[in-house]
Image (cartoon, rainbow over all chains, first blue to last red; front, side, top):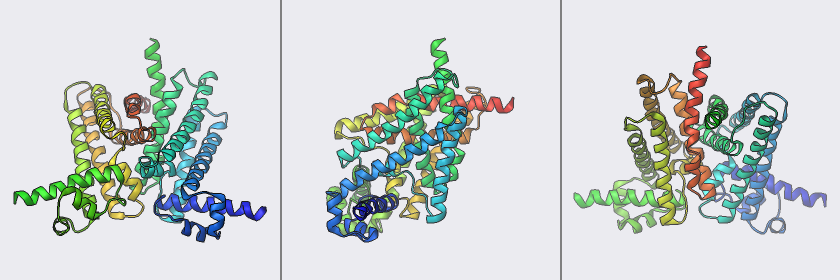
Length: 206
Length: 206
């Protein structure tokens, strides 16, 4: 059984790597099997299709990024410092990748969203759910920061959405410039989104 | 000569439509010619390759969006109102498209960035330049708003970058949700980015 689950893990890791760097369409089942050292018959034992494997890749990527966000945000430091740390972690990840691969590949979910979400309703829904998971995780962190008195009251859900959108946009710009430094340089914008949400909420309350 | 330049225009318009809705790789020269009603020989008379046509599509799309931004931002209203109008225009465009096509296709540049920028250095450079053009146009608007006393002093260039990143991220989220309303709902975030930049600049100056 050890070897069987190992083959599944290898297929998932290989798909993550190849689809992240080259997209969904360009990567075939045969190539995935060759890279993972798994027979084609075994592939279809674990995944009914390439598409099912792509859904598993979305889940795995979404969970790993969410875990990174939660680690970065879990400490007792002030919210703004934790948010900066989150962008720093993302910066470090992209820089490490850039150094080893010579190229920045952006966010796998963003890449899939732009390659596939118009052509495959199931994949679009899974991407949507994953972004929603991120928003909810961030929403919880913001809500706790308000409850603890770390920051004044804000509309936490909308603010969490603006930050996830901003994060995706920053990674997209960085990819276009092939320069992870963009992620570092624009990190402060996320703090700005919260500061201004605080201000807007105060105005609303008079 | 009228018909000749007409064929070129038709090819460009067809490529814009097909590549926007289906991406670069999925659209072939034969299909482009058939849709545009142009012979294959004529295609290569105007464009040495599909790639050259894609570069022309990037330019045309970049210029049309930039023109939309400049129209939205040209009036004498306060900056924040003009910025809201810019997001409203984007919202209207995506909603109209959604109503006629049943699907939101996001930003062509974002789509191309995520499909191609890792695989084609020339296309990545063109996308980078187009985003830079948008940042510069917005930077100028912000600079004028500061000069006119419409808003207090800010780091206009970094703020323009954060807004373009935010704009791309919002359109990406909206595409994943297949819902142009997201663009409308998150528009206020762009104003927040400026408000907070004003605040940050004040703190810096003490």
